[in-house]
Image (cartoon, rainbow, N blue to C red; front, side, top):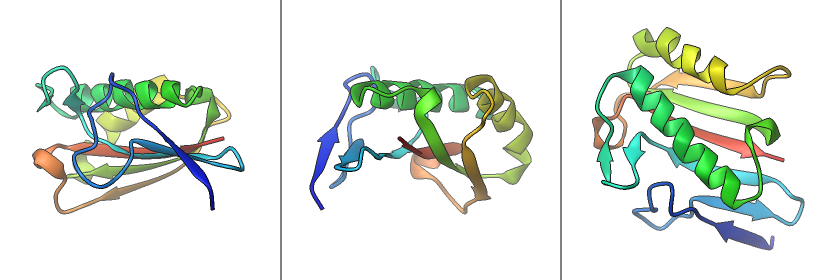
Length: 126
């Protein structure tokens, strides 16, 4: 299936054999998971899950923008938390980003995330 990759210098560069995002011929946009890395420093942002989730959404906004998309175009998010106890704090930031009708979402706790961050989010836009 033909696909086009895209990236933003305002989001952390891919550190492996993957793209920040891929657009299919059908117009679907798949974003790789974004972590709370500050693209200017390459380091995790200071703070807890609230600050980390805010940075994740800054990174997502940058990658979406490179594809000509916004949060209004997001149809599905997958949220990965290092600790489900952080759900309410992550959800508060998430709720400030999206408006109804909300994207579909899955949220799971995982054993560990890259660089020991607290949250990672990937999404699909149309």
